[in-house]
Length: 194
Image 1 (cartoon, rainbow, N blue to C red):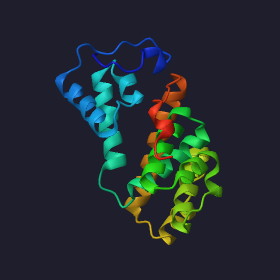
Image 2: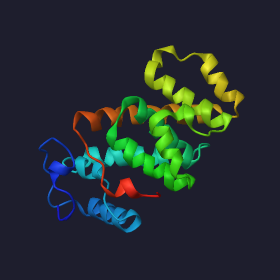
Image 3: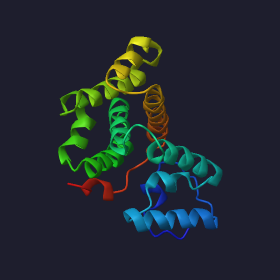
């Protein structure tokens, strides 16, 4: 890989070499990242040892976080941060906290969600959404129809409930993978939207 970014040791604690050369489509995707945000997120570089896994990850991420949904992009990022706070996932708290700051224009919101979402200035709808995502994270087996109804009572459709659950579930998976591999966030995230 001809990326002059961080070394593998700065990205992940596993010795998994990236595919070289990168397939043309992957190289274009990484170039698009550099063009849009100024760097390639370390999570993508970490997956570059297996292009099929990278493609599966990016397809799911892009669908959940950028695809059509009754949830705004900010709401999806808020779920990512609240779930990552429960799991204490350093990578996702830093990366998605930056996204919350950027999307909300509120430098306090990302940090507050990362430490205790209950202290954030949230609408009742947002609070219900994060209550559900956190309960799903802490004790998924205890979700009952009352929990889904609480979301409906705040204006969420059944499709929205699916999307809340899907985003929370995705970040529960990625949090565990990031923690297991000591994945490190790009340094650029720390100063974004401050």
